[in-house]
Image 1 (cartoon, helix red, strand yellow):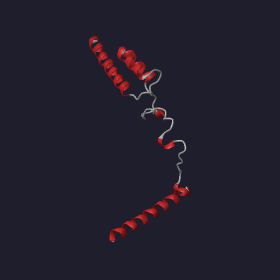
Image 2: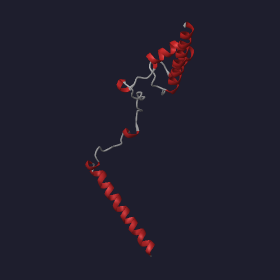
Image 3: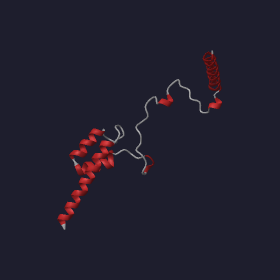
Image 4: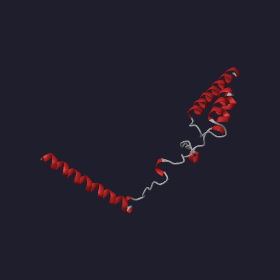
Length: 123
């Protein structure tokens, strides 16, 4: 019986080790806690049981909402696409008169261009 328990313990430790190795490798850079990703990778590789437990307790990224949600994203970049300096984004297009005026002007110009092309094609 003790041999079976020792073998079962070894299988559990190996399963935990493989899980933690894959988890460290697939974690996004910059989201790990307390050490860089490569540091955690070396710890888990060199110390299978202790390194795996340390990874789960102190290195794995925190989950959003405390449950089964996604990992927290890395901090947003300094100028995300939707929030660049000098770029105005109206919250409601109906409130942005300049935007509506430009749309009307562009549509009218396209109508005029289409009429001119049609007249040239007919002649």
